[in-house]
Length: 107
Image 1 (spheres, rainbow, N blue to C red):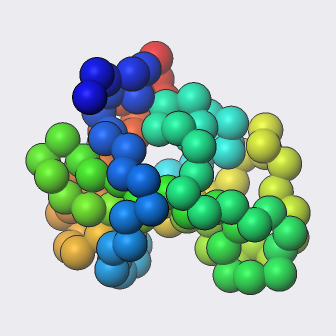
Image 2: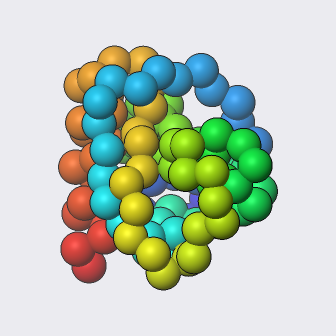
């Protein structure tokens, strides 16, 4: 599989992973996340559930992480800056994922 513009994250199709929130967040837009890691794995942008967008990814170190909005309970514009949660098996893994995302978003 060749690496695209979002080379620091490998996209996983419909991978179901268990992750926990360890306090790691990042502020950005839906459109920026799509630009760097691709389309969300789950999207129901109607505000009826606890999340509207979910991405399941692997970091370069092979750590499974989930990136998701949390309890916005409203439709989210693709160009609106909001706080995204980064879930994983440990705080260190979620911090690593945040650093990788920050590098991608700065390009």
